[in-house]
Image 1 (tube, helix red, strand yellow):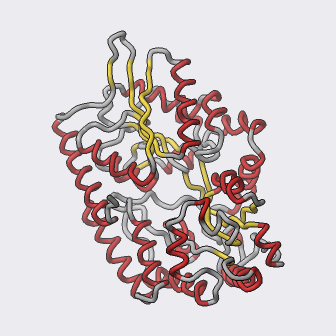
Image 2 (cartoon, helix red, strand yellow):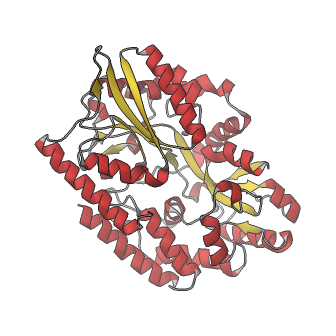
Image 3 (cartoon, helix red, strand yellow):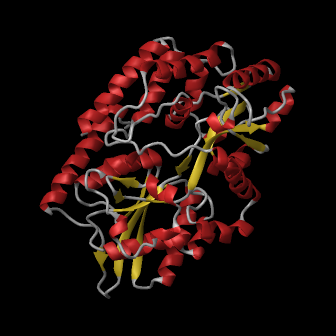
Length: 436
C-alpha cells in the first residue's frame, strides 16, 4: 500500500517522538548483538539498487576480514520503504547500529536524540574529512553524520538528442535561463513528435538553486523559511513557461514519465535533451541511454557561472544510532567506510566523490571513464560553487514531495504560480512549526 505523503510525515514524526520518549526512559530493545563466542554483531541499514547492494556486501566482507571480532548484519532496502521502516524501528528502540542517512533527515533524527554524536567517538578520524563535508552533517553543534561523498546537481545533456535535432550544446559558463528555454524549445521543434528539449526540474535541489540565484535560501540557519512568496512564485512561473513554449512535455506526459523507471523514461530512452541529475549518476545514465552525456552547469539569471546558485551536496551520510549497544564497533565500521583505502577501492564514487581527499587520490587511477569525468567536472566547477545551504530543519523531511505536488497543480492549471507559492509556504511552515 502506498502511504500518502502527508500521512507518511505524521507517521515518521510520531514514530520519532515516541523514540525520544523511549530514549529518555531507557526502555525498549537496543540494537546490536553479542555472539556466544564473544564476537560483536552490529546491524547496518542502507538503501540502494542491486548494483549498490552487491558493492556494499563486498565492503562488509572486506571489513569483517580486517576486523574478525565484529560481524555486520546487512539490512538493505529501497528508497520507497526505507524511511517508514527506519521511523518504525526508531520508535520501537530497535534502530540499526549504523544507518545510511540523507541530509533532509539529519535534523529530523539527530534533533530528536536518535543519532549518535560521532565527534564524541574516538574511533572515527574526522580530521581526514573536508571542513565543508563535516559541516553538512552537523546539527545543534553535534556531528550526526559523516558524508559518504559529494555531488553537484547538474543538467545532463544527451549529445545524441542535440545532434539529431541539429542544436549545438550551450556554453554552460555563460548561459541564462532564457538561453535554456530557447535551446530546449529548438530541440522540441526540431526533433519531432515524442522528443522534448528539457524535463521539468521540480525537486528540492531545483528550488534551492533558483532561490539562491535570487539571494534567498530554502531555510535560514535557525530553521525558518528563507525566501519570499514572489520568488517562490517565479519558480513555478518558469516551469509553466517551459510547458507553454513546448520546451518541456505536457503535464500529462510529465506525470506519466515521473512514474516510469529509468529504462522506460523519456530521458532513459533518448527522448529528452536535458534533464536534472546528480553527478554521481553519470555512469548509470550513460549505460542506460547508450549515449554520450555532457554535464552542464545550471543556467543563471545574468549569465555568470558564479551566480548560478550551485553547491556541493553530500550524497548521503554514515550515521549511528544513539541507542547502539556497541558504539565503539559502530564507530570502527564508520571509520572504515570513510577512511580506509580498501573500502574506497570498493565503494569508488557511487555514493559521491569521497569527502576524504586521500581516498580520492588513491582511487583516481582506478576510476572508470565516467567517474573520472565526474571528478574532473567537480574540480572544474569548484571556484564557482557557493557555500552549502543550511541543513533542513526538523519536520522538513518530505518537503520535496510538497514541491512536486504543487508543480503538478501549476502544470495542470489547477493553481496559479502565485497561489501555489502561497499555499506551499503555508504548508511547509506548518510542517516545520509542528515538529518543533
